[in-house]
Image (cartoon, rainbow, N blue to C red):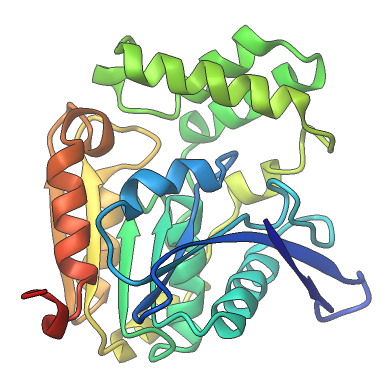
Length: 274
């Protein structure tokens, strides 16, 4: 694991971004960003077929990455851009919170990446509904008392309804719950992010300046990542391609298809025949 120290803007002080490298040293280089309460390990399945160099970063408040409190999208975007610049990333994939972070970046520097994947965007310029924030509140409460089963249950409530009793999803939630309980840190550090939006009132309008290809991926039956939010994002991006998976879930029910979709999109034309 590598660490990049950052002097965040403002009086709140600096921080550090933890990240890992994988794949070939040859281009392209793709940055992968996880979701809220997620980790580097959560994004690895999406990167398995992607060519070139892969940069997996922990967003501030996750893993060993830190930043000034309360956490906000300016801090997350600064951290993501710092790692992308340092490792010369030309493409990026973000999951949920990671997708929102990339939206913040695209709204301000629309040409920073050559290709972008927004996987399960949950929010853009309109805050999440209270029922979508509730699992994160419960997660914070359960973490505060080191309740591993309670944390696992809260994590499952952020997944599509149809997969919450599927063994692979439950195994993931139990593993991640144990990791989160073992970590140090304020159990409520993520709540500001659960309630925040990455775009200001003119953010969607600024997304119309984006000219690079963007893949938006959504799934039916997922209250935490509603298809309506993904459609709103895709409609604001002139170059967006929207793919919606069914209620079985993109990762849990269609993993091979999801990997193929991401790999094809993030593979430069010159690499397709190799």
